[in-house]
Length: 183
Image 1 (cartoon, rainbow, N blue to C red):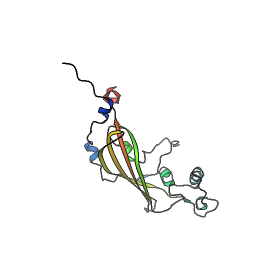
Image 2: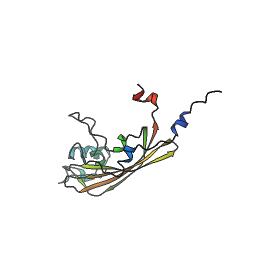
Image 3: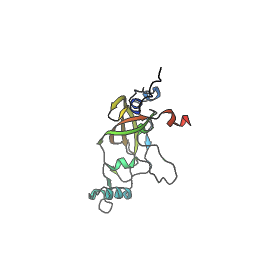
Image 4: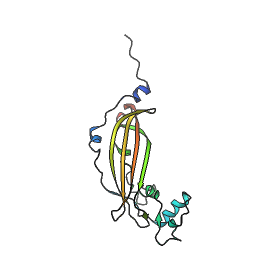
């Protein structure tokens, strides 16, 4: 009797996978409140406005008594700098990146922002991540998981700054020969 053909890459990629129990357990639970690396400062607001070609005078420290940041600056304020002087790097601002789903790739399907309170120079941003949904999903890229994450951000007065909903498709599985365990 001849041996069966090994599965093709497409068959392996489309094999359904279960959501790990430890990942299921965190769905709906808010994570810890995490601080941004730096307080908002007028120099970084200026760089952000120059880069995004935004000449609104509210964002210019030479023209405004209290420098306001563009709403989209908040997304930059939550990121850990790649040049962290103390070499202390913060975890990624999206928890989804570190979920133990066994996938090797991801693509954002949607990002929705609701900006609530303006962000100003001197504000210290904190944020809380909550995985709101994980579901098996299949699309043109293969089989994986559709993951939705809510990120709520606050200033130091505990005023809500924004709510961001990120929906990601995590897919691609490392085969045993590709993993660290096989080495």
